[in-house]
Image (cartoon, rainbow, N blue to C red):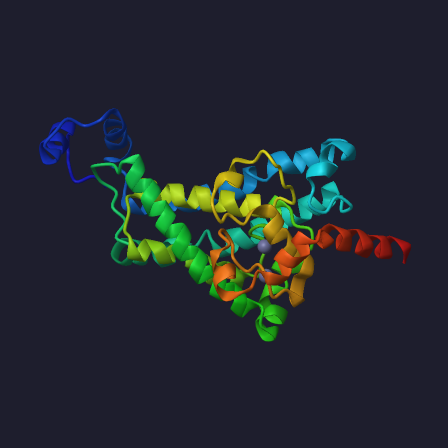
Length: 294
Ligand SMILES: [Zn+2]
Ligand SMILES: [Zn+2]
């Protein structure tokens, strides 16, 4: 809630006139409790995970295979409408049960550890961009080690195997995981916020772009014209698709966003070898041929 009763008070405190964006923010949030602003973040996460995978799901279901196959990472795997629906329903249930109650539990953390501010001034685009970059880097590092831990035998069998049910993932499978994994891996998303506090608008933005990235990584499609190809060290869909394809035995490609952790700790070598000799796609073809002939 903004601690000024009128725009004049806010401008006196700022020592300047409000920008159009700040005036709009004042109008819409002046009387809104911080708790409700925080709850918007959960709504945004649920909305992104519901809507963002939809275009590629429709493309896969409705477009002719010859049109989509060149861009599908595992073109022989065609998911049925029932498979999409089941994944969406299971994911929605897990998210509703594990993420929706979070504001009630984590609000004190948001307020006193993350120190997310809700007032004025609004952050500049550069400030938000720099903070988002920090959050991505921190989350990637923390998430890398949690993901490696999840691939130890006990953790995989008890928890992480759920996320790996989809050997050929789709956007809706991005948050498809055991509820313990949703909590534990999800906590990595909050690590950067504890180091670099931000404005609530950046907080919202973080919980839009991070799920969007997860949906892209699990999309099952790799488009050569994707703008993400321009991001240095960005793993992307093919990188993570290989991790899903290998499954339990995977000792490679643990990073969720960038590839630098895998480079540093040497967990990229097998994947890079396979990509370089073009064996990855051949392996999929052979494996699927075997399956269909059995
Ligand atoms: Zn994994
Ligand atoms: Zn995954």
